[in-house]
Length: 482
Image (cartoon, rainbow, N blue to C red; front, side):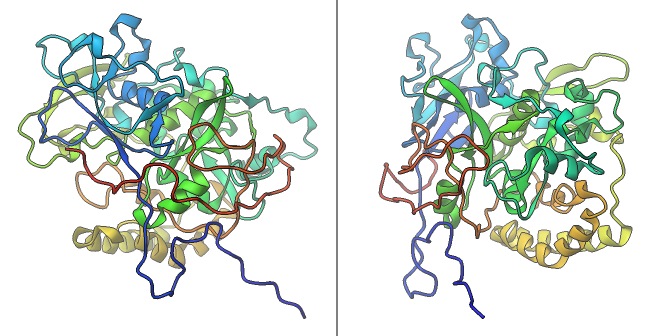
């Protein structure tokens, strides 16, 4: 009998395990964007890892900020906000999109011309629940996305579940091209069903008047289980970046712990997605908003002992009428009231989770949250490991009969705060044991180099990553740029 060698790490660690050498962590500069009205005591309006050649894709940063001030790209050009290096409002200091599309790491201010005079601070959207979808007015990057139509007439069998339908369409993970260990991943998470309903997102599904529109095939694609977990923890998002004059869908790393950043950067930053079939661009854009509107990126509410109140625009839904909004002033995220839609009973179907299973999970999460109060490093990394070992086997058994449960429910508690006042938990990145595929080469602005180019074909042979050059680019310790 012959035995295969143990698998190598997808990305070699900076220091081999058990080598006796102190661990070394990859670091990256930060790009911070501040609200010009608030004092230096406040944390940034937004903060990003600058992994795109020492900066970040300009369009990603700009449209993220536009989301925060209420879909500002829909305004006339003269009233659209802009980046500046100065706190004082001055149109002549406006930063124009660089030719290479990269906004260098620095400390910026985001100015809103609608609040150019002494009108007080411009209000921001405090959470995804309070954000309203801009029907009929998608930002430019999400128009004409390279998404192929899905022709069901060639199917020889009728899928019996949502998971089977997703596998029949996608065949393999849309990021790693893996066939083993894949599952259906919601684009707009199933936990956001109240937001989905109140924003009338059902108009974009393939089957109208379905009882559970958020579970529609247009709101899903296939991902490997571990990649799905990182995706749901907002470790990376999918964004349409420019490459050779056209938009391509790539992954972009939002957050990472220092000990996993070298792997996250090499595996999930500027990684071209495999061809998507039949998904709705509107859902992809909503997913972008869901990932951005998070306390790890939007850090203004994390300010301790603020000396000013923060202006926020909240959404108010009323039965049989159009939603309205109003501006209120708060000193923390705890003071933001929930929307009517989030407090109402969700019309989504009941999941097939037993009461005993819920009790086991609730007990476990409670214990982990208590530990998190004294040791925040436990909050995701260890809680996920413990919970996975004790619970995921049972969830996979249930997944055989109801596949929508497998990740969306088994991990949904980790999308909730482990500490009071945080909208969502900080993402964690467990190690990935399998090599990834590099498809269509490397995007401009990526800090990685690619020695080979694969064809745009889902059946193309996997090409192993040879490693990562950690000395490229300007690398500085992660810290706040006060």
